[in-house]
Image 1 (tube, rainbow, N blue to C red):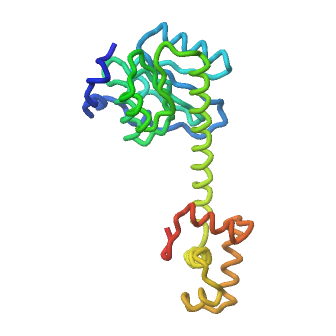
Image 2: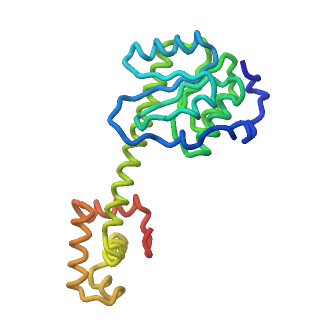
Length: 236
């Protein structure tokens, strides 16, 4: 087992030097079912957790250390990480920090046999979904995992939406992008025409193209898109 996390210092970056970073790239998007990654160095505990989650229809992958997880391909599907704080080598908190550092956003449910309030607060402040102390009720773990998977699904949907809006914006001509910025800032056509030194008729034409290309149902919808892209007076 690893050191007591209450006195364990953060892992030195060298602990992760041998990790092949290319494995941290997600596979191409797919329609696969959600998956739960379990990292625990206790084989019986891994199997117990696996059996419980498989019994409710979830896919599970098991790991006994942080480096083992980080050297594996992570599927591009809703997922979460059930993570023991005590691990050989880099501990659970170290893995949480490393995932954040390399921009891998997997909701984490922490497990520990020796939890305290300080550890719980630390985990939750760093973004953990839950912090369960062994032994825990099966339903508590199921509820925590369900919450984590739902959170990841919503994050993915939001990121896909942002990506789609960004792609539409980039399909606009430079002048259309400028018109969209002015329109969503609340300027009238004649004001935009003056700012851009165009005729009002030309502005109306560009405005219509913007609405069509962006797939905006209304001006309010277009404004929400601009807010998502954080458009300012000179664009994103």
